[in-house]
Image (cartoon, rainbow, N blue to C red; front, top):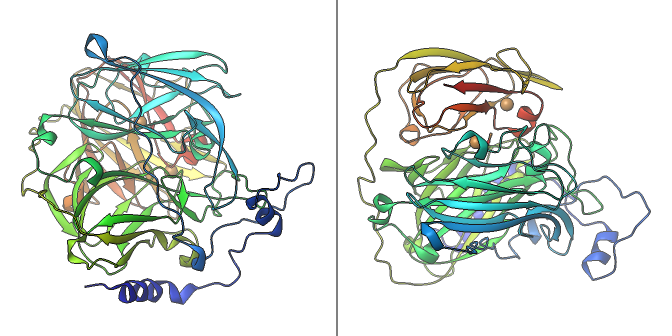
Length: 488
Ligand code: C2O
Ligand code: CU
Ligand code: CU
């Protein structure tokens, strides 16, 4: 049982060893801006990073991104309009930061879709750079996949068709313009796309206001209040949840479902609750796991999703529980806390986590095998020793094939991960060992620590065409760790 004191105590226990001093005070210039004075112009801003000190955290509520309303629901499909445009937002309290957005929202608005009901999104690019919108985890035709080279020019519009002919899953959409995906996503071009179906709807899981998407990421904000971007920047050490640094989130003493998304460019999260208590893992990239499992930590590399249920009924009203992270880079004093759950009321709870969540189709007999090797030697990164060339086909896959891909992270220091467009795959083994239960579901992105090998099986029976696969640590894909497969 964690009271406010023990929860805080546990948090400090973890953080105490690496507490740093003076890391976090805002420069005077920023304080003035925070009080309403115009930003200074014409002077070169100090490059020093700004963040929120440990004593100033949890003062801002974590917002839930707005759910986008369709402009039309006629003809059996939902039509949405999105404008990509610059905006300002307060990631740090009182500091205005310029971001790139879908509809002015950081992160972008959530699209809610249902299997079997198509979605059409008109994307209007009102930025100064070409963009390309990819729906991560979705099976769509090549023209609608947001290929790196298939961009929307500044000022132009483009219509994307999403058939939603796939089971429920917590998908997300983000920029994918060649060489620019890393910076564009970092500056804000990402949002959630929650696809549901009758299998998921039939379950008594927490729903409505108790089903909350949470996009986690990091930022590096410089002394001028701007997002600093450089490839591989280890100074991205301010942790952000749904667009706010170290927010609190008020919860009732009951069960909640959280759809965690790691939308960071590089950072992985190794999450736990500050009192070490149970988290029920119910889903991953491609929707619900066959069965829930209880754990005290959730690991998410860039682009991965985890669906979890946390039961706050075990805490008395007034308890504060911090969601903590232990994955580097950065001092734990900076990166060790993510957000705080404040249990502020009781509420009735008819929800349950059933012991069986879904069944997955049996894997077909594999029809072939191939190996993919990930390596990086900054400033270049490679897939099978080659830098991405959009004019080259790296893998020819027969339509209908079900292939086992052995993916090797051949680096000794850099973690990588591996994401395929078009398919949801199954992980077969990791380093020759049997899998943890969190790997048992449908996946589109899989983490590989230095030296690790993962075997996965993917079935290419959806669409013909060319699609990319890449490391989803987007600074790496932008440096070349990406390749093209042609299904035909
Ligand atoms: Cu999340 Cu190629 O993308
Ligand atoms: Cu993708
Ligand atoms: Cu990588």
